[in-house]
Image (cartoon, rainbow, N blue to C red; front, side, top):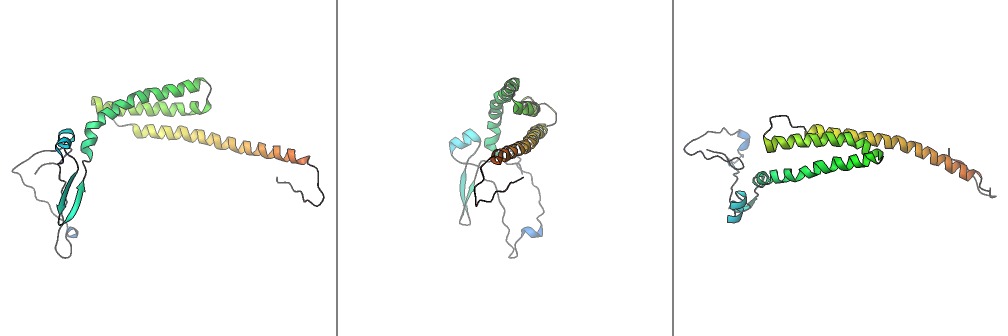
Length: 187
């Protein structure tokens, strides 16, 4: 008994009994067990601990993928690559806010909260901090700042439509009346 990758553990000479529910056994008494087989080319095993592996079971081809074993070794490089973005995006939004961009001003608080939450979660993974993951809070902050902006745009849109309708009515009021044409106003 042991554990399979990604957190593998070898434990020989131990047994464990698993109880199978009756629903796992087919009416004809057959039982199918699925095992994760790990292997592949020497390069895949040397690089990632395993790779795609094809095998035949009862004449059926089965393809397995490396799954999380590729994710774990590449996680830290991806996280480190995101740090410059976590610094650049708030800086860009602050620059836009300084130039008077109203959309950037609305998004600024949400972006800062999101960036702080991401840095917190990066420090949990990279430095071993023992704290709560905050990225969900960061996403809520982004969504709240976007909702604020969308509410403003919607309210402003209603005003723009009313203004354009008034301009159209004023422009068509002075049109010459042609005989035989029915004129009506939309108000």
